[in-house]
Length: 72
Image (cartoon, rainbow, N blue to C red; front, top):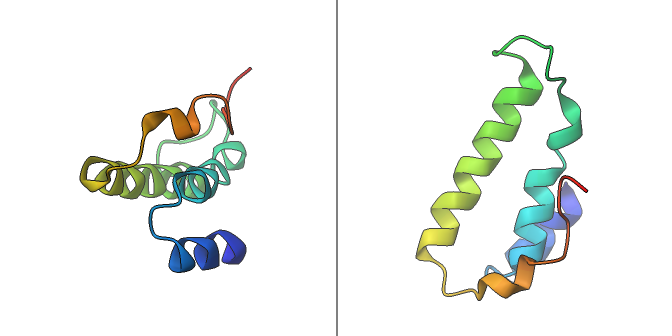
């Protein structure tokens, strides 16, 4: 987490570092868990933060097309 935070600090437009930071939370929760689990709320918060950044960003969406996909 700290490495991604530092990468974003050095390059605020680093879409890959931002998305990777969101994906750190993805394996932290189970689909059978409760809706208020720390993993779910952490993922939801990170995703909301990414979305807020994305709509203001001029980053080309192709930067994330094949990298760091949560599902195969």
